Length: 293
Image 1 (spheres, rainbow, N blue to C red):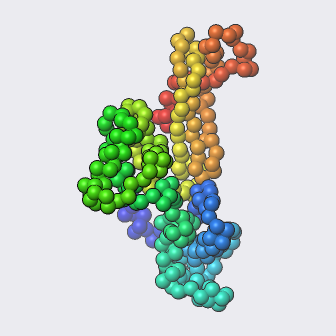
Image 2 (image 1 turned 135 degrees about the vertical axis):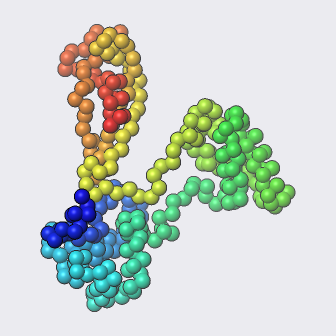
């Protein structure tokens, strides 16, 4: 029982609580200027040493006394790091170190990059923000409605702008500019396509918020399935389609493994059965098993 463990005279915490060393998401700093990446990695090295007591590139060396989490409080380690940076010519305030430490703990190495430099363009260019927001609202409202033409969406956008800002206040884009803006705003949403597909996409859950990091193999796994455009003959003689399911380990960026219950199947194509060395290995049953995992 926990109460007996904590009250035992022989109980001792041999591993001090500290920030774990994480494996950053692959390519998280790609596309940023070289100086920005170098600055973020510089901060990362110093913060990891301050939080864990060991350097990032050699986590197995003895803990430095001034950064030992077992005997030094977080504030003491922050003050020691500020003094060390000042001695090496990098004058840094305690407040800045604390701010960078919080951002690193929350977002990983990406949090050490100036937020203004990692802002992603929405692809709308220099279009009037009032026009962009009005068009987005029109597109959002179109999700549950029947499919209409682009001209109908344009008229709805114009009426919305007039209702909110007054007639003629907001300059309207040209026909070419509107179609270009509409293509950007509706990308991947099937606004002008199938209503059934559009509603199905709208019901999908949002992606994960923030950056996900995994410290060890098997901690976080991603699984997804996709249908294969082939028909197979199962071992019971039935003919059906199959799905390909894959599991990827985030920490190592490798496939997690394979289902040993896959059995050889023959492609249903009207052609002679392939030899045993060229047969397709896939079953819908094993796909369902992987999904349950």
